[in-house]
Length: 193
Image (tube, rainbow, N blue to C red):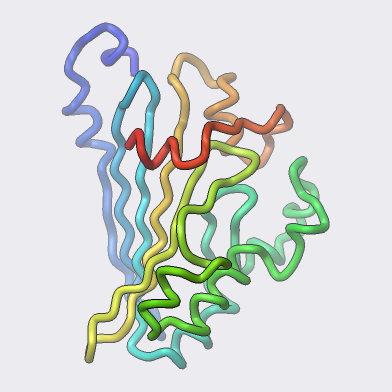
């Protein structure tokens, strides 16, 4: 960020922060990609998680055990079971179990093979914005025919200007953050990226 603010080329440094990986699990294949970008003086990150399931039964079986965390307010699996979740400053009974992300994934599972509902369901389609940190995300389903169905979770994070570690835009992404919620306009992070 310092190079960017000084008007110098930061593309080499950003390319070193671009990462991806693929892991084979028993019931699915997990692929992820992270790509940073600097826009309007803010450090933005797009992170995609691809979960490829051979069949719908494998998806439903994995739903209860998979660990996903979009941000501190949106998580699934054993993140919910962790004792420290209820000690988070932003924890409230209405975000209690099953975790909101697990409910959203379950909704998507109920119509994973229905393209029309996947794009119009009021509970699991479209862009979702965290009410505590500058994170936006959306769920998509991609059909790969005989290879299975992939659930794609794309999230966009705004990590702030990067001037210091006390920046609320950065700190609001941490579990220990106790400051006020950081609320950029809905859709602004994805649009800026």
